[in-house]
Every structure is written in structure tokens, then in C-alpha cells.
Image (tube, rainbow, N blue to C red; front, side, top):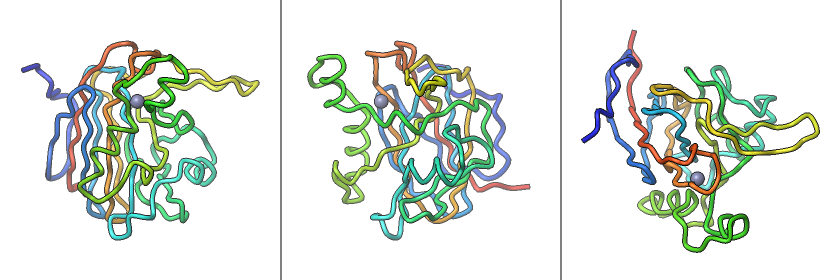
Length: 213
Ligand SMILES: [Zn+2]
């Protein structure tokens, strides 16, 4: 076992569930309205690909495009929301110790890994997300594009796009408060063919809690 549970990030409230997401893993959580989901980058420089659904009506789901346009930024952080394809607020950023996340890069897939790197049958976030969402009856094609937590995608003044190593440091976290009952699926990104995870796969920690005083 690793010493994977840092003590430096404090939870103010009642912890409902804690999950250690192993490198390359994927998992789903039902998060009730008012509860907070904390995603901790335990060692730093590890990306998590996150999708979110209205738990009561799973066809309503996160829209990166609405999230960009309604937040008026491609850089979501504290005070911004995750918005649905029906322009409803799914979750809100209530804390963010990193400040560098991405809404443009999408999730890595077996198809993009083949296209970009000529690699077959690679572990990837789209398949991870689909596998973790299967217990809720969702299929691969039901998985929307996503928020990339801790992913660093600098956009040049000329519109150029590239993937760099994350800015996140050990123990960095975001807190997302559910603004309705939601289903959240998170893939611990297994990408090793670009600097997305700085070429080493690390665990992530997820804590669901009821905020207190
Ligand atoms: Zn990925």
C-alpha cells in the first residue's frame, strides 16, 4: 500500500464515501443535491476525465460547449458551473487549489490513440467512462464529452492547441457541489502517449461529503 491518503486537505463536513481511484481506473458516484465531490490529485500531475448526468433523467448531461459559453471562459474554476445540454446547472466549483483544467481536449479514446499515435487497443478514458457508466444502463455512445480535471491545454493567441504536463501539485483538489441529484463518472486518465499525465500514471482520490459549518 502507498501512503496515498494525504492529511493536508481538510474536509469541513460529514464524509459520505471515500474512493481511491487506482491509475487507469474508472468509477461512478451518485451525488445528492447539496453534497460535494472532492477530487484530489494525490501525487500531482494526474488528469481525471469527468462526465456528469442528471441522475433523475440520464439523457440530460454535461455540455462542455454550454459550460464554456455560460461561464464565459474556457478555464473553469471556483465560482463557475458545469452546465448541461439543456443549460441547467449540474454542479458548481466551490473550491479549486489548482486552477488549471480543460474543457476542449475531450477524452482520449482508442480511436484518437490510433489516429494520433498509431497505437492499437490502448487503455483510454472513453472506454473507461463507458465501462463505469454501464451499471446505470448507459452505452459508449451515450457518454458525452467532458471536463478534464487538472489537464493543462494552453491555447495560443493564434488559436493553437497543445497538451502540456499538468500544473497540479501533490494534494491539489477541486470541490464540485451537486446542484441537482447527479451521476458523476470519472476516468483516471491512462494516457501515456502525450504529456497529459507527465508520462506517469498516478492514483486520484474522491471524497463525497455533506458540507458542514
Ligand atoms: Zn484520458
